[in-house]
Amino acid sequence: MEQEAIKSKASEISDWIEGAVSDIAYCDPEFQDEETQKKFRKAKKKGVTDLQGWYADELYNDVDTLRDLTGDRIHDAAEGKDMKERWGNMILIADAMKNQAHKALTMALNAHIIDWMKLMKKLNDKEKTKCQQG
Image (cartoon, rainbow, N blue to C red):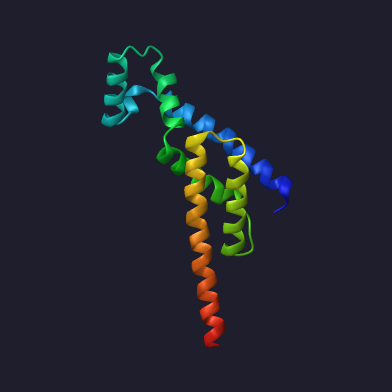
């Protein structure tokens, strides 16, 4: 993938994440699970008045939530003729996203990068073994 395409996809995904977090936070309370409703009650007791805004901030600073949101989005945005190239592009997109990311998002992206690099190493090791045997 070209550098401009990587930057563009990184920017699109970063914008999408902000919207997704907001959509989740401003979801009708009757559709929230019990755990989320419990968080809202606890925040309300603490005096939080803008519960949805507070919850959006909570989600936006939660590494696990961000990891869930970013993984599939980056995978779908990456292109490649094979998995090795696709994983490489996924790493490049995640790395480009880190340039404008806050701490929690950087941590989520770093976790993805590590996972994808491990997958690439396994694939490389498999290919080396095949070459040595054949």
